Every structure is written in C-alpha cells, then in structure tokens.
Length: 166
Image (cartoon, rainbow, N blue to C red):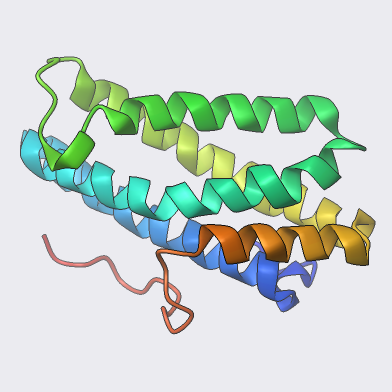
C-alpha cells in the first residue's frame, strides 16, 4: 500500500498499515468462500477481520482522527461513518456463527469492498496528512490510544505474501 510519503517510518502509522495489510489479506480469503457458498467460513473470516479492526479503529478514532479532524472534519466524519457501517455488517457474524439473513453474504462482500476503498483513503490521505500536520502532543495521543487498545497483529507479522490456500 502507501509507501511514497515516508509516513510508515513512524511506528504508529507502520502499525496501522500492518493492520490494514492483515485486513486486506483476510478479505482476499472471502471471495473463494463466497464463491463456494460457504457462509460459515465467511462468518469465521468476518470475525477475524473484526478482531483486527477493533483495536485498529480505537486507535484511529481516539488518537489519530481527532487531531486530523481539526483540518479535515468532513473527511474524518465520512471515515467514521464508514467504520460504523462496516462494523455493523461484520457484527452479524458474532462469535463466528453464520448469520441467518440470506442477504448477509452479499452485504458482507459489499462492506469489504467498501473497506478496501476505505483503507486506501486512510493510507493515501489520512496518514500522509497526519505526517504533515500532527505535532508531538498529537502523536503522543495516538501512542496512548494504541497502548490502551493493543493490537491483534504482532509486530513480527510480515507484509502479506501470496494468497493463502483455501
């Protein structure tokens, strides 16, 4: 994903980017499950995505977004609304149980397509804007949010490689 502006040289942005990479890797596993009609597998993957996005979203919304919203309030409001919509669809697979709503698999595919686009907006817009505008206090707030939220992706997690087998 984003590597042109140098924002990944900051630990906070690097960690958010690694979480994005993991989410994209998980999303890539949804298409074959969807094509196979395997709603149970889709639900398990949705839960894995939720596990990564939970702390990730807390860091963004309690650390990064408030500082960036000073200069870009409309854009941040859109991103937060997208978080809510994506979370709502993912939450229907609570505890990995397949949702009974027959429209859920298609809605999940739509939500994860939105999530991919959302990730690009963050990496190509929010992260470089943060690098250019945030001061020491704002970065400390991001680090504090990370310390409180934790992460579902270990620091040793490598960037995604070839797609995993089904």
